[in-house]
Amino acid sequence: MDSLVIIPTYNEIENIQRMLDAVMALEPSFDVLVVDDGSPDGTAGIVKESQATYPHRIHLLQRTGKLGLGTAYIAGFKWALEKDYGLIYEMDCDFSHNPRDLIRLREACVEGADVAVGSRYVKGGGISNWPLGRILMSYLASVYVNSILWLGVKDSTAGFKCYRKEVLQRIDLDRIQFIGYAFQIEMKYNAKRLGFRIKEVPITFSDREFGTSKMSMGIFREAFLGVIQMRFRAVKANPTST
Image 1 (cartoon, rainbow, N blue to C red):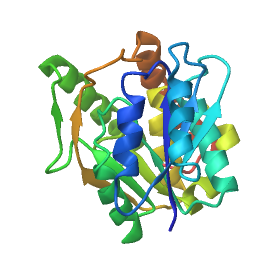
Image 2 (cartoon, one colour):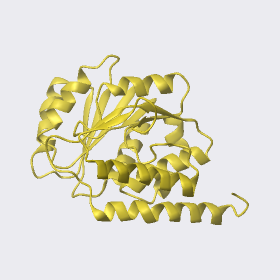
Image 3 (cartoon, rainbow, N blue to C red):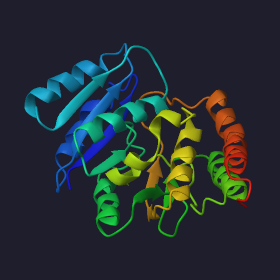
Image 4 (cartoon, rainbow, N blue to C red):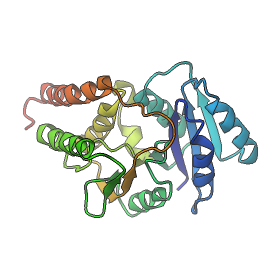
C-alpha cells in the first residue's frame, strides 16, 4: 500500500530539510505532503527546492495564515484520499517523532490495525528531554480522557499516527470540531466508535531542539473542555449509550 506522511508546518525552517531528507531515506518508501500555513520564515521555499529532487514523492499544500493543526490535517487527509493513498500518517516536523518509527507504524497497520498510534505510555515507550511536571501533565491528560470517554488508548493525545484509508473515508471529516490537541482525541474517538481497531506502538518522544513550540493555554483549554463536549455529543446522539 502506498504511504503518505502529512507534516503540518509553521516556521519550521530549522527542521524541514532534515525531516524531508530523513523520510526520503526510509525503506519502504514514504511520500510526504507538507501543509504549510504561510510560514513567513520561508519553510515552503525549502520544500519547493526539495521537490526538484523528488518531484513525485514530496508534495506541498500552501494555505494562507495560521489556521490550526486540525484543519491542516483535515486538508491533508482529503488530499490523500483524492490521490488514493492506502496508508496515511500524521507526524510533527520538529523531530519529536522519530521518522524511523514510521516503519513500525506501517507494520502495525499492514498486520491488521486500522489505526496505529505512536504511544509514549505503553511498555517500551517513553519521553526524552521533558521536565517531570510536563510528563505528569501529559500522562494525567490521557488518564482524564479515558475516564470520560473510555477510549482505551493509553496515549490519547498522541499525534504520531497511521490510518488505513478506510478509517478516514468513514469518518465525516467535515464534522470534526477541534483544531488543537482535542483534534487528536476526537479522531481516535471517532475511529473507536466506528468499530475500527486501534493499536498502540511504543515510541520515545523527544522534545524539539530547534524552532518554537506551538503549545498554548488555549490549545490545552480546548482539549480539557473538548473531551466533555465529545462525551455530551455522544450521549445526546445515542441516549442508550453508556
